[in-house]
Amino acid sequence: MAIVLALVELILVATLVHSGLLARESVSAYSYSPVYHVEHADNSDSSNYDPSPQATYSFDDNYLAERWGVTKIEAPQAWQITRGEQSIMVAVLDTGINKDSLNLADRVVAEVNFTGSPTSEDLYGHGTHMAGTIVAIAPECRLMNVKVADDMGRCEPTVVARGIIWAVDHGARVINMSLAMIASTNLEEAVDYAWRQGAIIIVAAGNKGGSEPSYPAYYTNCLAVAGTNKNNSLALLSSHGDWVDVAAPGFNIYSELPQNQYGYKTGTSAAGAHVSGIAALVFSIAEDSNSNGSVNDEVRWAIENSCTPIAADGVGQGLVNAFQAVTAVVS
Image (cartoon, rainbow, N blue to C red; front, side, top):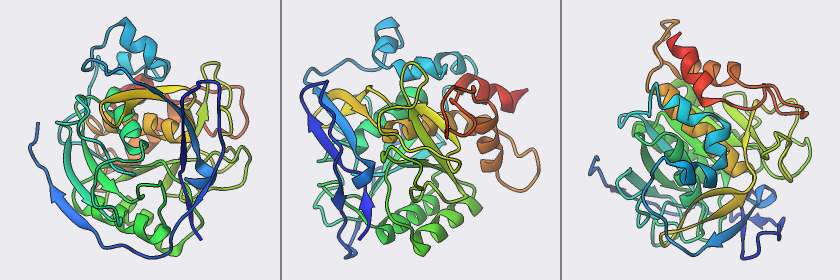
């Protein structure tokens, strides 16, 4: 049985729950809805809600105070160079994206539902949170809503593989997968296909708290992301090890939730979303310096080689830095 991201929605900030859900093995039919209006399991995340809707993105002190991860990775400094581009599409392979959010409605340009759910909307409260973080870092990018996890947060490798291929074939440059499961040949082949087609695949390292490899993060053509807290220490339950490539904020991360609500989540899912935001920024200005016909290798190189070393084991190159990453491709 495959295991994927699973969240436990909590009201109390201090309560953190570690739980898992098993995925169903059947492959569900899917539906595709073009929007084009152009303008986990052992990988569980803890969450809590803020019932008060917030205003549209305004990059003031209050905004940055709430989204500490955006400041930590120096995204505001990166915006002096680029805020991303509408042509850069980030595919969020998750539980769906709730388009009722004021900040996400005009950014979802395509969607597909690979699950048995009757809707591509996010009824679970995970994919929307990831999408909000990505857009908070790369506000000019556009999103693909690729629903591969059902309304209880369950999915399986075959379905995720189909989602990857669909996203790439429909123009995704960045693929965000905040999920974890067992190894799968189909899944690895889909990851390799995405890389060959010029996409970069960002994957949460998982929330097992140890060094046991997580999939698809462990695959060579994935960028595996561990989670950190405000003190640059490993976040609670974050997986780590010599197979992890980078680290990013993954503790008490504030972002969008369904029904136009906001809340906090802790886990490597949020860490991966931070890196996907950086990847979207870098993609908007990167050039094919080695003339191999794609820039995903330049984007990955810039992200990994611009990290800040931190005093934590098993976090690869260290803490990602958006400003240094975009600077790396323009210098």
